[in-house]
Length: 112
Ligand code: 5GP
Ligand code: ZN
Image (cartoon, rainbow, N blue to C red):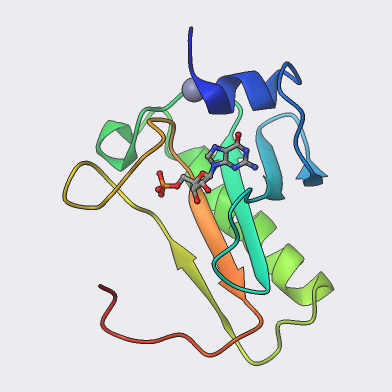
């Protein structure tokens, strides 16, 4: 399948990895929007948050677990933001489920 994040998960496209296990990969975003900007993806292809089902939702919990571990390791004691952009209105640009871990600066709310 011609999915850029599947290719990153298979190691066919290089990435700056920060964490990997059998289910999840975390790597630095190419175009960082904060001092810390990491993407967490399931290795299995899930197109977006609307494709989460009772059968595949376990990996979402695992992504949050990994995000919490990375936030501790990267000393984001002041807080951080986890973001999932879904679909056209959500400004999703890569059609493989991913969670952005953003930290190292104060965020604004509401998002644009
Ligand atoms: P989205 O806009 O879909 O929520 O997020 C996609 C993110 O993937 C963007 O922040 C973009 O910078 C990042 N991205 C797109 N292609 C690549 C790539 O080949 N490598 C890495 N590391 N990040 C990418
Ligand atoms: Zn994919």
